[in-house]
Image (cartoon, rainbow, N blue to C red; front, top):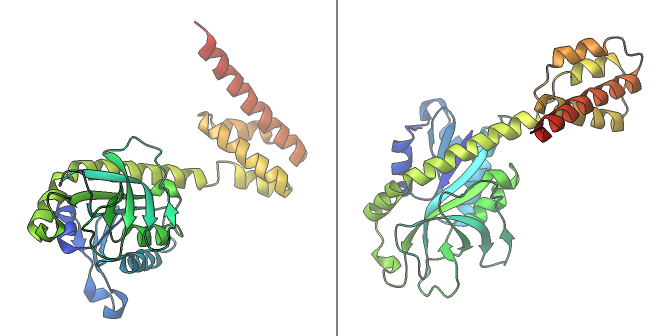
Length: 283
């Protein structure tokens, strides 16, 4: 699941149309429980927060609470930003987000090839007109990051901004029609980012699940906390090497105690890893 947080309807419209998102069913929800516009798809939700980092943070917290207990989710803040030099319509992906008021900074985890130029975002309280720093100026990312960090690792928290104004095209010339057009021009990059983050979310969720045989072995033998942690890592490694857990189960059935079972799992992993290493080294 991926959660999209945008500030304005004109930013949201091209996204919800492109991803086929539908308005949440307000008839089944008390009005007081739906303080933000919400659009939903099978594996994507979009919330329109309103302008400012306080509202962005509130939208993240509300959406996380509404779907608490679900699978691992990714978070993506999409919107517009001003920059001294970058041309309008260019998309940038944040590698650093700073709150101009407090100096607090966050660093999204870029563990994939960025679909756009990387940039520092500086979150300000009002539209910027002087562009004194080498950064993209916007109004939501700091609040978004501050809130999203409570619900996901940094690899799954990102901000994508489309440049809407610069020194040659000032912010007072920005309008809803232009924002919709710029967002539409960036849909391909945003879609690649969404797909990448959804894949990462699935990988992390699978990694966090208990590996095969852990429950069976824990019910059969008594493992100390330290041995259980070691067993978890070994079973995860065994699965990553593509080995059949049932074949390993058959080899474990006659172990007398936890120590013997742990030693047998370790031997099995070492044998597979050693075999793979030998094959890679062969001409």
